[in-house]
Length: 309
Ligand SMILES: Nc1ncnc2c1ncn2[C@@H]1O[C@H](COP(=O)(O)OP(=O)(O)OP(=O)(O)O)[C@@H](O)[C@H]1O
Image (tube, rainbow, N blue to C red):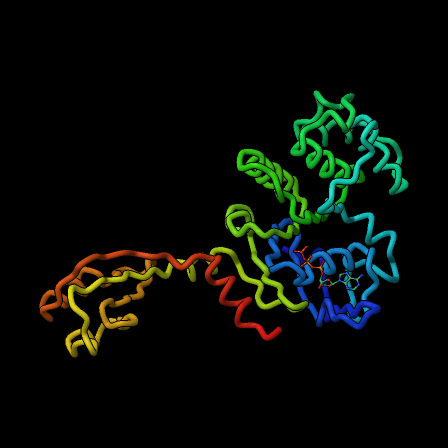
């Protein structure tokens, strides 16, 4: 794979002195799906807007397929489709005219075959003559995607594509994204839904306070998620963990009446059986046993909480 987007030490300080991006560097490969996760105000929209040329960076560079977004703005922008967070469409315009008009804005010649193929792919073809105002919220979001694809971009930015969308439509949207990827479109999406990143991303980036904390292959993150904990409630509180349990990664819970054992679900052996035997041999009485999975959400919250403001 080769890089389609290269971001180098991108910084943005707004006029009021707020540092929204503090030096972001990132390379995105052709045809991949990258999910950017981050809390409100982390800088996701600023990053996307800077790449798309709507916000001027304070310093740093962005190149799209070799075109610098500042020196060679038009060529760079033509490669990009942007699906914004807010639904802003002309209510009384028809679907097909909305999408056609968008293509025209990029100075591209009319191409009805392309518009038809985009509308069909997004299951909007039978709604092509419907006015925007008569569409459901989910359909309007599809029109936003169709608009963004109207000028045949190679990179598509989706800024919170499924915010406020119901579960069925969200899955539908994920299928649409998978289809676009199959067509060779590179996709960068921001999301607050961690399960969305899990479902569709190849890589996950975590951004907070204007800094990219990590960018990692999703499978690797999933492996980190594989950590589980088992919590054993004891019949009676103990003061210290018995010597015979020293070989297990167990910690005594607050109050001394529980033990927490962390294990790796991807490991060949979890060690649970051995632990339970050792507990019985140590004469400990178990009142209850619970398991907990540390999710990508836990990892994300830990990462974000650990950051100084
Ligand atoms: N024009 C502006 N002037 C000053 N500060 C701004 C401006 N635009 C955004 N900000 C600030 O920059 C920070 C990053 O905002 P941004 O919209 O990029 O975050 P985000 O990660 O997209 O958040 P959300 O998840 O809420 O959409 C916020 O603290 C915001 O208040």
